[in-house]
Image (cartoon, rainbow, N blue to C red; front, side):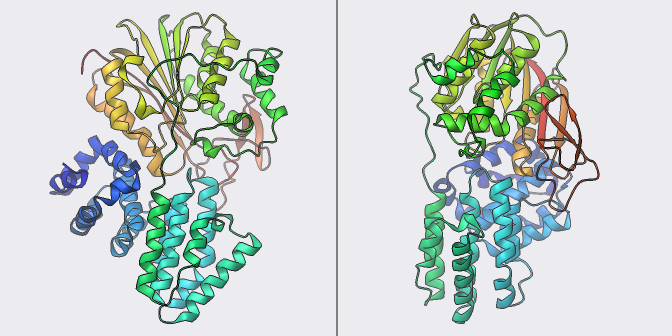
Amino acid sequence: MNLFETLIAQSTDVDSLDQYLASNLHKVQDFYSRDFMYMIESREIIEQYINTKYGLFEQLDLEESYNRAFLLILLDISVRFNFIANAKRLCSILRKKSVELPLRLQAACLYLENIDSNTTLLERFESICESLQNAIEEEEKNPDKAIAIFLSYYAIVVRDTHPHKKYINALQSKIQTALEERTFLFLHTEYVEKALDIDTGEGNAAYEEIHTIIDSLLCKAPSRSVYSGKETFIIEDGTPYASELVGVEASFDQIRSISVSGSDGKADTKRGVGILETEQQLMSYMRNLGLMHCAKLEAAFDTLPEDLPSNIRLIDWGCGRGIASMLFIERYGSEQVKDILLIEPSEVALGRAALHLKKYDEDLAIRTVCAKLDELESSIFTIEKDDCVIHLFSNILDIEEYSQERLIELIEETHTGNNYFICVSPHITGIEEERLNSFKRHFQQRYSDSFQLLSENTDTKYSPFWLCNENKDCEEVTHGRGFYCRTDYTPIGGCRKKWTRVERVFSVRWFSV
């Protein structure tokens, strides 16, 4: 049954919908993160669902994070499919309940809400572009969705101001000026160029043609890993970096110093989501994001019990350069670790992670699997019933490029026994935060007898306290990892220097599924 057919059946009243979302929000998230071509097949039933259930959405308790995330997802889908009436209604509900919208969706609401004239629609250009540029710089892990929002705005101007050509010409002039002056860098893309080349003489025809461009933008094929289904040990060897690593101490700070001195930090690190391929990308990530990554993990490790067992198996899911495993070994030592399984789709990052961990202990038992999460097979896990498995999910659960339902099934199938979950990520928007919440909530609901929540923290750019990477407008250094943000320094739009975090740490034990 299609997800939205299930939602229609489960949305007989507000309590039924709330209960379904509390247990199944991850299924909605999985649908939302599927490729756009898959979503297009459900376009009609999605529109039918939103049209007929609007009254229930107004009654949902938006104090519950899963309900907020659900309505944000519906708003985003409505914007993608240009369900204008539905998008306006959802914007209205969310604003009335004071739900903070992602910057990209704030931009969409600017051209959907309170438009009283063609002049107003045109005047919103700068505000829309500013929101989208900030979204790309601060929130979006993939700029394509933000570009699609702008193209949707352009399409509406083309259609709604036709046949008053002066408004279309004025907007095109604004876009050209922004391109020439490089005011909004996201406009420099072939998709905007293609839209500008369309003959706007027929408003509706041009509108449809622009949306064809949007579809082609959102339907781009995702990147692939090199996973072959076979396990081969991957470790960096014989490189200048490997030689330089020999000369530093086995500590995170010393290892990171190689990247700080060897990189200007300007290489594109793909917001920590894309598959890194070059030496400079690896070093830029460690230089620019290493301390923030480290601070979240150290805070999470503080919540683990002091008497961890001696038969630990570490699984570093989406390990990147191995920062999470490095910091665990640095704190707890390697004596009680039976082995470490490193999972990462970037072969160069995976090889470096293994190299880093061997620096701590040459005798560490390390296995490497170069794969995306959705490519993993149960056969790669070798867990015994008395093992204590510590799952390291650092900056991975919040991304869209995997099925959370499949990941949960894989874990339940292969990890019977005692499990600790370290789940940390930056706070981007409520949609990404809810991916960590729904992951935790599944285990909490299904294994309530053994579930133990060890830590749950959320610090956004609007929160009064967390850490940052600079000392401007901040107070004294702490733990050597960053600076305290001043509690009275929260400018409009949030502090852009302040680090954010979503932290969920819990333990759970099960013996069968």
